[in-house]
Length: 317
Image (cartoon, rainbow, N blue to C red; front, side, top):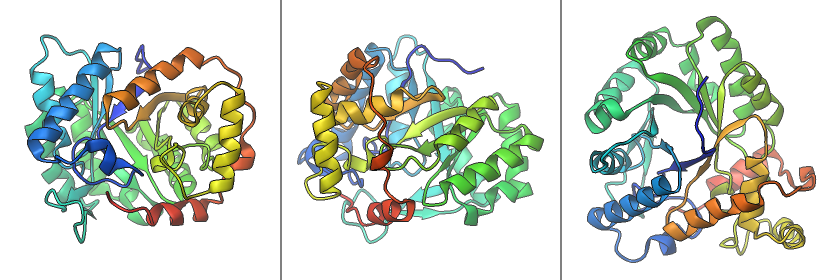
């Protein structure tokens, strides 16, 4: 069974490209968003993460130059004993522009898997440990594609773990299908899903997956910035109430959001999408309060369709 000493993982979605949909991302990165400056910032955040015990690093083909940033950083290490996951299925289209007409394109075909696997191998070489299908949804039909499954089985035989990530209002349906398909295939060993205080729709089915020896990775635990102090406009009543709860627990909203997910026993890795060292430091330091008893927060669940429709309106910045 996969095991890491540190339950925190670092996601590179906001570190490998100048535009992302996290609230406040533009201010986090500063004015200089050149590739050189962003590579430098990414390497500094990776240094801090590694020096503080983080060993899981999560990237994707669509995260701009994140794979390349990570690989150049790994090659600078005297000894690297981390675990690296990447994803295929989306193509980055923004050409380093924040206000691009289209940022990414989805393609879950076997041909695109072959193409992106070559690119990932060229970037990460032998440092790649895990390959996810990126953002599987029920309409993807990728879990039923024999050509894709055959390619993934070949990749697995080379010593790479295989997983999927999920997204959208039908995450639960996707995970249920994933569990059913994997009963026969025994191909997948990882599952990465959106889970946070606002979207608690998949708790029971993720626990079921964990009981079946699937390693569950939690992503978007801050709801793309909606569950942070950077959010000044969305879900105002809920945020005000959560901040009151956090205050009583002597926590920040960010600490409450992170630790609520961290305390779920079936989660193997909690991804932080920190863009800066200060954000990452706050996430790491929150573990000093990891044994704090957090009250039931079921009342803050946002209806699934409302949650994802609001997410779709967030600006790339």
